[in-house]
Amino acid sequence: MLIFKTVVELQQFLLSYANKTIGFVPTMGALHQGHLSLMAKAIEENDLMVCSIFVNPTQFNNKEDLEKYPRHTDKDLAFIQNAFADNAKLVIFLPDVKEIYPNKIEKSYDFGNLSLVMEAQHRPGHFDGVGMVLERFFDVVQPTRAYFGEKDFQQLAVVRNLVKQLKLPVQIIGCPIVREANGLAMSSRNERLTPEQKEQAANIYKFLQDAKQQAKILSVEEVKNNFISAIKNILALQLEYLEIADGNTLTPITNWEETTYCVAFVAVFVGNVRLIDNVTLYS
Ligand code: PAF
Image (tube, rainbow, N blue to C red; front, side, top):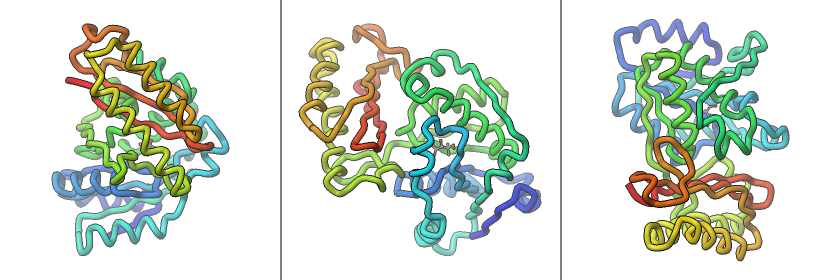
């Protein structure tokens, strides 16, 4: 496993891969099985896998969230090393903020409807930060393919949009959500939950599964109301939003006839930890 901390060193090394395929897995560390699934796919499909670990300050709209974001690089490196023992395809990029943002930049993107709904609405500026850091990473790494988890479903749509807008020659690959045995979607933020909170948070997926059972049988409004009351009954959980939307455009629907690909999206607070999840209701 090779580790680079600067853009210059990484790019110097990548010169020898000019005619090879590079799979890129951008992360913010606090790695879990979900990240490993992205890396495994990137390793399988490419000559080299580059994983970045960088907590990107520009995508945090909440200072406390940025400060409390779990950081433990040594543990992350050991985790990758153990998972892919003796694998010669591993490159880890550990830049600091100055490497990624040598000049102060502030950019805003128009992702159309994706800039208006759900995460964009509740985390102003978040996707501008994601856009800025990925534009920089794609420029530095020049990946053939880049891998993103479907837990951040809207982010995946934003990244596809970004790549299309900028005409970048990278293929964006979405990978399925990896869940704990109790159904809780894996997330770096889960590290901030107590064991009891983790059990309570597992209800988010349970209620999404209930919504899936009810889709097309009850009305959209009834399904939403049932989800909202179920969450209200668990005192530890506070719903920020629930949207039932078209899985391609992310436009909320009020009637099942409006889409043939329907996804339910939620953001829920467990204490002061904000979790998101989604389930395809039908497609
Ligand atoms: O999904 C994440 O962890 C981040 O948003 C990403 C894609 C690494 C950009 O900082």
